[in-house]
Image (cartoon, rainbow, N blue to C red; front, side):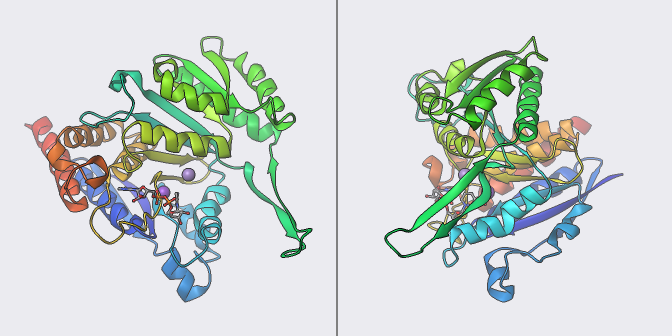
Length: 361
Ligand code: NAD
Ligand code: K
Ligand code: MN
């Protein structure tokens, strides 16, 4: 029996509700297939910080190294500054394992009332590729003369040729693997005249190796309008760490809810485990109430299974998700419904188990 080692890191807030739900779905997959998952749960995050003064132990990456994949929830605690929680946990793992490609599929799932007028499911089917290792989130910078009138601060955006080239290559390859073979490269090369101009140049160089991919360029500000006004003109999208961070939350909202959207922090070279998570955060306003939409985590489980090469299992979970979103009785509050996290989870697990039984019958 094929066994995969999965690390679960619920983190904070509703991460503690949706990650156990994601694990239940993987258990339903295991119970109804030839796969086995060996889970190890890591209680890192805000509670760990209060007890130990850090978000995860110094040797935490060592403990994760031998895993086949990581299912993550959220880092963010109402009583700890956001930059401490983010840098102390999620970014530590992303950067420590050089998960340089952050991949965010966006579609309007069946039954979801998306806010875009005149836009149906076929008009919005994107994958956003976010540079996930450098750029605006390099962590380089500082503050001087704190509290004085001459105070100054910098966050230096570092873009390297190696870093830019590898993310563009990944994006071109991904675009090539999708039916439309289309890529939009997003920059701000009119105003940011150094690194962004380099992006455009490297994009043209990499594009030469992908003659079958249709690609175009868009400035990030114009891109927000294009996403709203002409969603069908987009397919695969690649952008910097900051730009894609913002664009992908917009994409998630356009597709119906932040609670649905998944992401993978991927090491394309497979030197280290990749990490899958819903794109949302800790959602302080609803935590502990059973209101969290677990669909973003379930879709992340689909990405995790795809990454492991378990395509049949991934398809089964995705079909179960879409059957559940198609039913308004199973919509959580963010989708205008009244279902709880547990009800949605039970429904998806039952469908995953049922689809396996039907297949076997
Ligand atoms: P958020 O995603 O936590 O919440 C934004 C809004 O969306 C809230 O109204 C919330 O209730 C709603 N929402 C989010 N996920 C939902 C779900 N699954 N079901 C239903 N509603 C959902 O973003 P925020 O409020 O900006 O951040 C809160 C904390 O989370 C901060 O500490 C932030 O730093 C952290 N955060 C962490 C990550 C991460 O770990 N990857 C990502 C984003 C934010
Ligand atoms: K998250
Ligand atoms: Mn974000």
